[in-house]
Image (cartoon, rainbow, N blue to C red; front, side, top):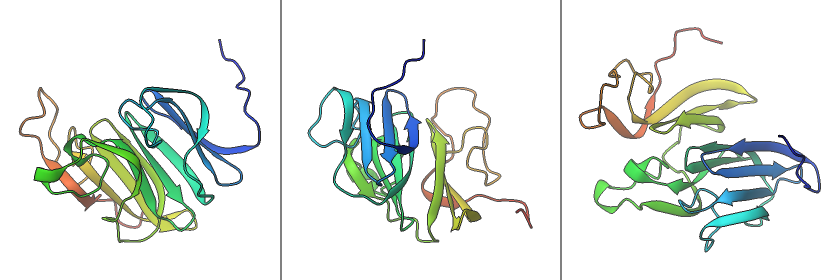
Length: 184
């Protein structure tokens, strides 16, 4: 049954992934707990389970978090996107060359391949990541990367999932989602 966590202070955002929880306090600090086996908490040096909420770094300008399976994303007040966790197929989004992809990104690292504007939201699933760009909560562009299973990347080139990922369209760098004209 649901139980109240004994957490001090006021919290403004929280997200859960496969086995991790990330939260932001009202003071802008980032906190995490749960499994760090696949580095999705971004707590460098931690192996295994983090049983109580633990502050991640010392920055105080975090505004939003999103856990997706075994990777995590956080947005800072300047609109920059940061990520950590399982980086299979470059899913974290560091835009690394195929021959030098890190399997895991151990601590939150700035995603520099999004240069179209400020990130205001991030979402996704096991095989894709979707990012909204804009200002003042108004979306001006949506970008995606990963496997284009069942059209998840929104570029009109997706394929129906019928088996293994072999042969599915894949983008390791962001592509613009084809949104309808005049969508507000």
